[in-house]
Amino acid sequence: MTIYKHILGDQFYKLHPMLQKRYKLSVGKKFKATGVMKKISGGPKWMYPFFLLGTRWKFLFPEHGLNIPFTIVNTSLIGPNKENQVHWERTFYFKNNKRYFNALMSLDPANNSVKDYLGEPSIFYSDLVFFVTEEGRMLIESREQRIVIGNIEVPLPRIFQGIVHVTEYYIEEKDVFSIHVLIKNPLIGTLFEYEGEFQTNDF
Image (cartoon, rainbow, N blue to C red):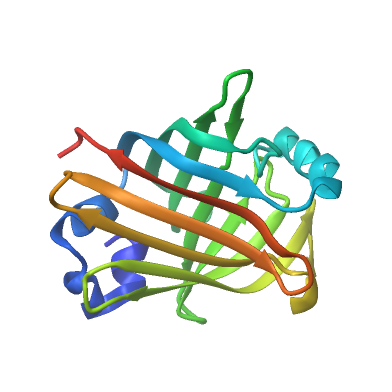
């Protein structure tokens, strides 16, 4: 059972059938897709150095734009401590740069959430909770967040957090997945946002 089926329980079967196929992902298998981000935008200009620094860890980036090609690869695997993990590799192809937004997810059954370690090596942690709408869409929201410094994890007060909202659904008329990711801070507002569509030949 994948971490997503486990966390959603019976709700998993309320997802659109194509989202069920996408998120069941057996151990050792990959989900690969290509698409276009209709828009990628971010926070105020003074944050540019921080986002540029984040590219060293494949975690966020300062570039913005419209109609940006991208690929996504999800790999289901077993981690060193024998827990199920899913590696996320999101690659964005800007005119002059290739940027990444990578993560490693695993299950936290005690809190009924997914552990999301962002960056390579990880520099940011977020608890994620998953929901399914009546229309069969996947909703993902962040909860507790921490800065990761080596083996030390420092909790972030909510006022300093990047609060995450993700919506993913399937558009049957176009035979595509649609994704919208929004990261906001209570003080600054929008820190990072992308919205686009992607297709797969994996099934």
